[in-house]
Length: 124
Image 1 (cartoon, rainbow, N blue to C red):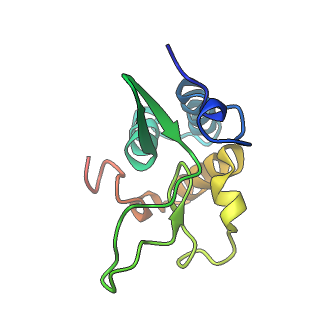
Image 2 (spheres, one colour):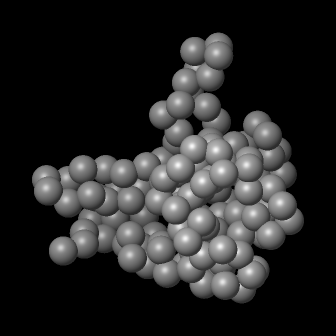
């Protein structure tokens, strides 16, 4: 059974893991991407919360990665968009699953998939 994240994080957009996956699949198809690679990147990048025996995808989370200065990376949302590297993207946009998925799909289509640590050509 999926627990909608709005039951875990107050005021969150009502989105489940399956809805986020469907959103990514649709964006991948729209942009002519390799659907499997795009979904694998999403699944790797997004932070997971363990609630009892259920894993919930947290599409608003900040990265847990610590940079060379000992500070948490300024990356946010389901796609962990780094705001320092992309100053034109706001934290709110990065945490909006619809906006962030579309933006990420466009970046993949433009040949920038390697920006994501989890892109299959990099780590997974």
